[in-house]
Length: 141
Ligand code: ATP
Ligand code: MG
Image (cartoon, rainbow, N blue to C red; front, side, top):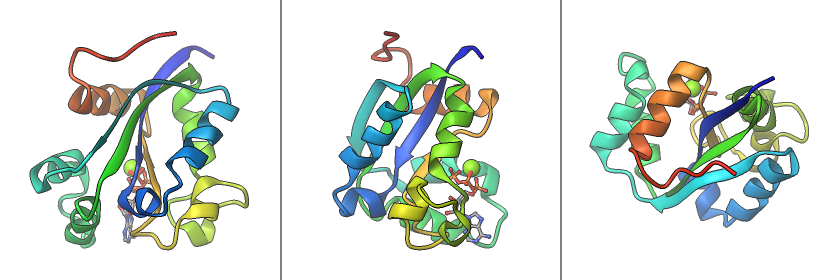
């Protein structure tokens, strides 16, 4: 395993539930370190660009509407195998199918409001990190 970085977003539903700390504690408990973090309100243009890969999908408008419905907490997580580790901690996209004990099983309500985003590969992680944290303020420790 090599040390990787991945992008995590705690989505508007989980921020509204006031569970940022509980979710970050799961990342830290699994050995991931926070390398950058910010609480922001995404613009519609940012949300559309971030999820551009899904632009042709029928759920795209609902997805963008949801992502701009309130503030999100965006982090760079760093650690051994961070990309897969984060995805394991998140659980399946549809919380009804997410394994017990995962973030989505415990905090998400629906496939639309599913609590967290995580990069799915090294290439997407690099693009997503550069999108939200261009250049500065990403720390290795
Ligand atoms: P994310 O990219 O948010 O981490 P994911 O990688 O598990 O989620 P993707 O396939 O990338 O899932 O889909 C992005 C988002 O689009 C999902 O988080 C979900 O909210 C929404 N989505 C995906 N598939 C569907 C679907 N079949 N119906 C409704 N919404 C969907
Ligand atoms: Mg995805």
